[in-house]
Structure formats: C-alpha cells, structure tokens
Length: 118
Image (cartoon, rainbow, N blue to C red; front, side):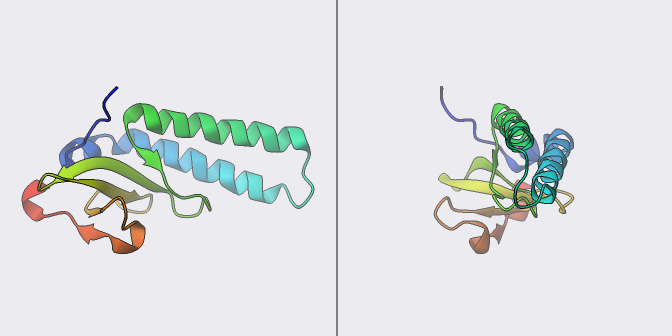
C-alpha cells in the first residue's frame, strides 16, 4: 500500500486526534518512568503494549511517533514540498504544524513550511 502524503492543511486537520493520542503516549511514558528501577514485569509489559497500541493508532492515521524519550511528543507526517519528500514535524506543545524537515535532517534541521502552503 502506498504511503500517504499529507498537505500541511490535511495534517493540521488530524491534530485534534493526534494531540489526544500523543498526550496518552506521553502519560504512559511518565507512568513507565514512575515505576522505578525494578518494576513488576507485568506492569512494564502492559504499559509497553499500551504505547505500541497508541503508536499503531498514529500509524493508521498516516503519521509516526518520533519521541523515544517520551518527553516532548514529536510526530512526523510524510509530505512533499517542491516535489521532494519531507516530513511535516509537530511537537505536542505546538498549536499547529508549521515546520518540516528532510527525512535525513531530523528535528534539529526543522524549517518553516512555506507560507503559501499553509
């Protein structure tokens, strides 16, 4: 199945749902950290499964979780700008999606989405 490419407007329309899923992932990450150094295995497994299920929800929308420290809630949306593959980049404390980066560049190489595409 071909991978979906979002326009910035399409990606922004998904944010109400993506925002809720990201908040749930971050909460599960907090809960996982709060279990301490020797948590019960069943608690860890249950939280890991919850996180996997939530990430699967994001994948079903067409976007991907990118915050493996579970601290800022980074989500990428595949897109094209000027015919090139890029990733629209959203962080859970941002109101809308206004940044992108190349697949190779990552978060540190974020650039503003051109205004005419917003």
